[in-house]
Amino acid sequence: ADAQMHTSNSRASRRSSDGLMLDDSMHYDTRLSAEVVLPHMSVAASQKVAQLWQEERDRTRQLLWVEVPRPQYWFPEGVSKCRTLRRYAWAATRSLLPVIEWAPKTRWSSFRADLVAGLTVGVMLIPQSMSYARIAGLDYKYGMYSGLVPLIVYAFTGTSRQLGVGPVAIVSLLVEVMLRDQLTDEECLDELGGTNTTYSEATSDVMQWEYCPNAYASLAFLAAFLGGLLQIVAGFLQLGFLVSFLAHPVVSGFTSGAAITIGLSQVQYFFGYKIEKSPFIYETLINIFKDIHKTDYITLLLGLTWWFLLWGARKLSVKYKKQFGWLRPTAP
Image (tube, rainbow, N blue to C red; front, side, top):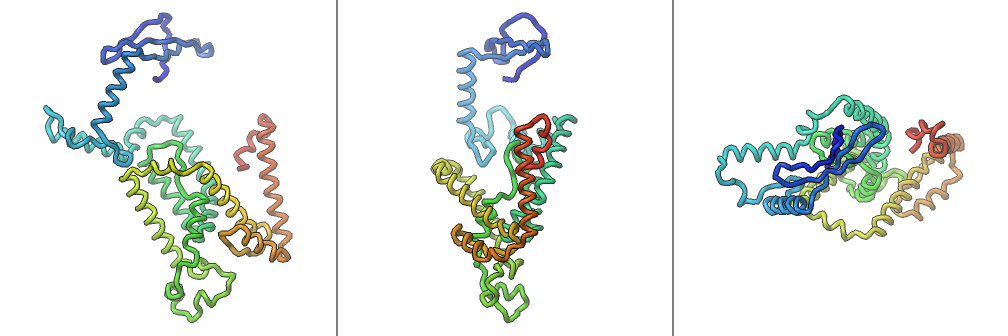
């Protein structure tokens, strides 16, 4: 129950709307010189609430994130069908667009905090979404689209304040691995205007998404559409319980392996020469050391300098919070 502030010095029992007795326990906050009342339910009141909740659960079923009444309870006795339909329509609208409920309750203080948070996330999102697009083998603009559009849509339709929406590194890596070399020579030729040079005849240093980016992007769009369609179907079938069968070591190993693979794919920007991508770590390491003599030392020096600055800023912000706490947002 929500804590309520008042200045009464007496401890009393309150009667709820359904006639049940609620016992109040008072706790004092010396900073506010006021009493914080935390209502505690009696055993009878708790049983009554549990019974009401069970009855409500028996009357409805969950469809995606919307609770829908069961057919036998669609039209209660004594209530007109038009009124019932209007009530259901309004409830469905509020479920699909939660912004209708929380927007009128927004205050200036919370809006200001949300504005600062939004600007901070937006500044971080620009380079982050561009790098995710490059990991997936797509143009930078598609990373910006996938980072911005889901946030706008979820702001009106989302129900969670903690859920992170948008592209992530693991999904980007899976897209690139899944779509690698899936285009045929004919599809690339159609994009290149019928040139005689096919992708299989091109140099091995050129990735397929670099040789024919538009056809590769169309394939990625199709994969994203099918993935969303599967998620909608899984939501209707309520298949979320399948996640319980994923063992923690499996998920942890997959996440760690993806992090190592993504990290190694970014090493080429430190050394200053192109490193051929591979889904296998040992092949990536071989490709790194095979052309190590091509290292651009100026690029390597700049990369290590910036990495050391980020690492040092994080360490200082944690160890000396009072003096260097302001450095924390600058270092991931």
